[in-house]
Every structure is written in C-alpha cells, then in structure tokens.
Image 1 (cartoon, rainbow, N blue to C red):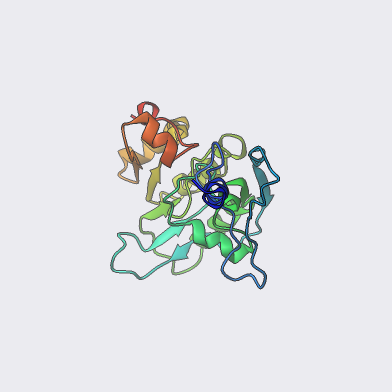
Image 2: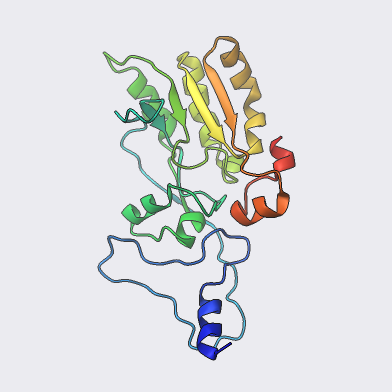
Length: 219
C-alpha cells in the first residue's frame, strides 16, 4: 500500500467512542474546515470531550404538514445527541448553529432550560387544540445528559398536568426512570413509548450507536 493510501486511511479513521468519521464544516459556513494528515502525527488525537451549552428557545412546539409523518407537532428538549448514531438524520441541523454535522453534533450539545415554561404558555394559548406530540423527533430525549439535566422529565410533567397526549421514540433505557409519569398517562391513553432497537448484535450496535444503551439493556 502506498504512503498516500495510508494517510487517506488514517484521515478517515473513526474517533473511538464516536459515530462520526469527520468534523467537516457545516454547509452554510463561508470558510470550509478540512482535516489533513501531513504525516507528522503518529498517534490518533485524543477523543473530544462533550460540552453542554444553553439554547434560548422562543417556542417549544414545532408543527409540520407532511403527509408522510404520523404526527403534526413535536418537541425537542435538546440540540445534538451524544448517542452519536452514524446514520442519524438530524445531524445536518447542527449546520444551522455554525457547527459540524460530524463530531460537533455528538460532542457540542445544547439544552433549553426555559422549555417547561415555554411549553406551558403555548398549551394555554386560546384556540390551541391538543393532538399527540412527538417528544424527541429530532434528537433522543433520553440521551445521557438527560440523567443530569432532566429537561425531558420536566416537559413530561407539563404534558401530564395538561392531560396532553405524547408519543416518545428513544434508544435510552433512562425512559424507565419516568414510569411514574408515563404509566398514569398511559392508563388514560395519553402516552406511548417506542424503543428503537437497530440490532441485537452488541458489536454491530456499538459501531452504529456508540453511546446508546446495549441491545440487551433496551430489551
């Protein structure tokens, strides 16, 4: 194998514990950032740390009119997702923040501390008609940072007080923590939870979803 091929292989190597293979600039940036291996680096760079920033949201309910989607409204407690699934369709949204859909998406996360207050205000608006809302349609509402920040739980508390129906899709086993809220809602046909299981093969699952719970833990 030529040295050029070796350099190309190293440049595209996956960062341990992360799903992305690069950190290319977002599509809306004026200056593109490209990683190049000039041969001076003998070892892989250290794995990037996860940072959490604050995003001041102006609203929580996002509406859509797509005939291909089974719900017309959604709530996303977080931007970015530490699960780092290599196939995640939400990655391009990080470009709107001036960040990369690659490693930035799974290492530079944002939460919305004003989410519960905003949601309660929106649900009380005159003329609002309840319908099932998808919680975490963009990024996982039960990704690791939820354990500490509890933003998803706070949103569920608002929905429960309002008797508002909710649909949850997640890879996070942490959803079981909120059974005290979800079980009473489910008894009233107000809550449904879908657990995303991509593969039962733990090795394959770890490659595709490096920071999501194992298939056994999901089951």
